[in-house]
Length: 106
Length: 121
Image (cartoon, rainbow over all chains, first blue to last red; front, top):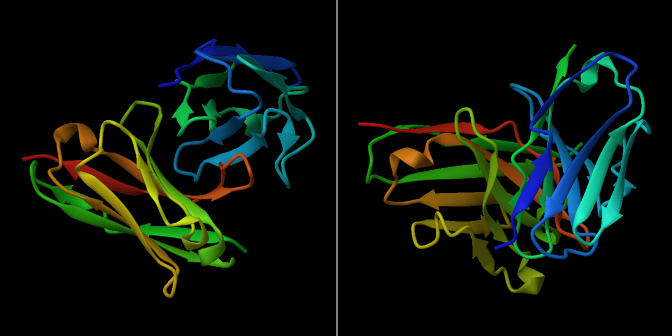
């Protein structure tokens, strides 16, 4: 099974900050990497698919990069509605999620 | 507008069975694969299972933690996906989400709000 490791597990940031999360796969997964946002009580939301493609309707401040085993999700200017937990997911061989990165208000 | 609505959750005793339904609208259900994902209390997301569209055989995949106990099926005439859960364990307690699996990379582009399954005696 492919394992996904996210870092950090949590971070504190302020509105307007640029934040970057990382996700590492235990083996090469090409660009089969997706990012999701979870907020309590709401349906999870797809942000980025295929490592760097922005899902329709997602603000352009979100961007993804990487290929192979190392990937990043960047929020260029953190907004109040972005405080949430973010998960990466590989879809190269069945599906596996990382353990999540929780973004909290500093 | 794409909508996925889960139903069928509730409290069930260990060892018993439960069937979840996912009613879809706003898209041609038969053209898409579907998947189930769960989140246990205080934990992260865990993929549960997947069913391909009929044109690709309607075949299924399951996580090791549920293989042999859970079964996914679909009724394209009703736009419903099912998750049959047998031999439930306490560790199956979670919010269960239905998702649509889209694109070449089979990412989960739409999610339901989830339904809570509590396994307890």
